[in-house]
Image (cartoon, rainbow, N blue to C red; front, top):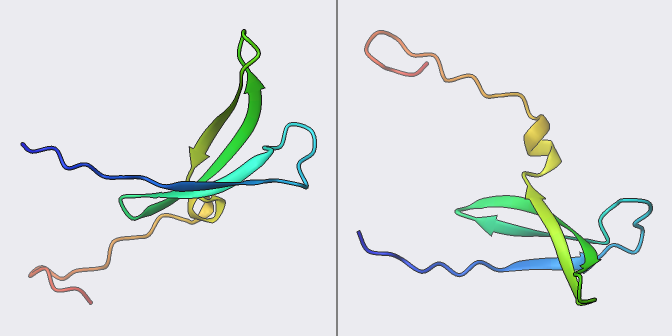
Length: 80
């Protein structure tokens, strides 16, 4: 099986309205046609070097959407 290199690109924007533990950076990425939300927080390692720690998730509206019922089919597999 051949490996196909796929470049992934994302964008993070400074969240000027962040308060408390809200992410200071937000953005998105598309992987295999699926859009994900990204959130990031600046951190420091034990040597004082700054980095961004973060997480990704499906957009909230996609998480909250009810599951789609499969279309009804007759005994021959015809959708109606």
